[in-house]
Image (cartoon, rainbow, N blue to C red; front, side, top):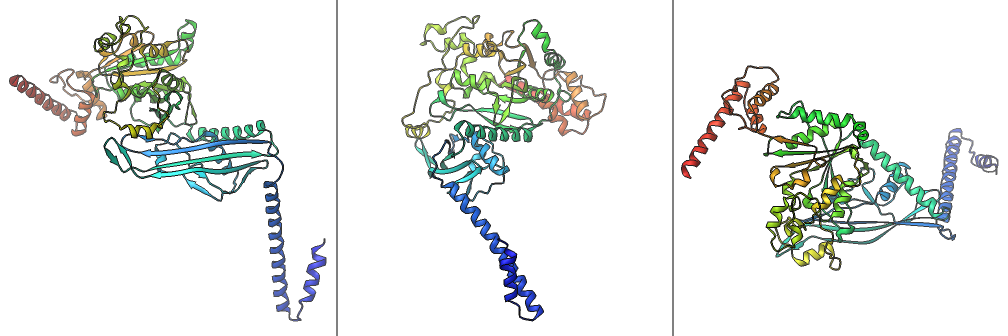
Length: 527
């Protein structure tokens, strides 16, 4: 139908008044009204067709449901972290990039800052739309909120703490009347992969420190392996670290990184185990940071005191995806820091067996063999000294879901994990300890630990190098009056920070040395 011939011309003819100004104004107004009505009608027809497709009586050909369960509870004793399925994040990312309007959404709770999900700003909300949402020509999305509850207090033992908790359970269903289930799942996989690529591009060039978190599942055997993630940056480098043996460590590290074929040709596993030992404040942690910066690798820290079973340690050790960041062994450094404080599992077996005289005779075994099983003591399984009430424990793990772990961590498993059947190409493993004499010899024998570095207090040449580096100039500093191996690197740096030049730094160190001598004399007199 010709709208101009049948509507506009007759309308213009009928509203002519003979007054040119009035006629022009009326014609413009009429054209505006007709255009507006035409646009509204077209939009209404589009919405109607949209609704008709949505309420089609044709049967569903495919359906896929994703549960997003969030239980955030902060207390003095524990924190439940939110777990968001990666498929959900991929769907939300697709909705955002496709510029699909969402009429209802809900901000993710503030407690989620402790979540392992580390959500990007593009996907940090729950979809709560009350009607079907068309997210692609053939795929619809429906959201159902299953339950929601909140509490403002919780009891632990005989005390109570006013900590808030929030529980959310959203059921996201994607369905189609055109696609098969395989096609629907493929679309979801594509969206998830697009989200992963987006996060990879965003995180490109960034370094991270990952720390293993205790299991939050009710059944430890089925609990997810979770890591906390933080950006890693450091000013530590081998240029500003000073200790005896630094060059030997650098040479060994360079050879490992630059000669993978050397290991392959000789049938040697291309992996490196380092053990750093010595007093606190002498540079063990700083050297780990320097190695991470030197190699460009991420740090993955696994505190053994948080490990509940052999299976959990294996999954944490071999994990290759950390919050959408894929890391092979060549991309990370695994750290067991202060391993002597983590667990009785790694202690010398003669010491462990003597402290457990009531245990089975299998614990009384020489330290020359790797084949040994030592069950974790109760203090290993529960490092928290405060007692939790039975009712509080039921609230945490579910009254009907308590289960005793049947797979306790053992030294034998740890040994086989480090150099067992499954090879770990390009892996760097670092252990640190203040008391190497307490570590079982089987754990640090050659093949598991390839290089041992003792971090001692500073010798006089090291003190001079540190002072010259700190004040950025060569100076004739007389350090002959100082004693060797009295000052830790932290002591020397502290003196440099308080001084104006090299000589005044030496004077401060001498004053500290005199005070220490006087204290020792007084202690001897008292004793």
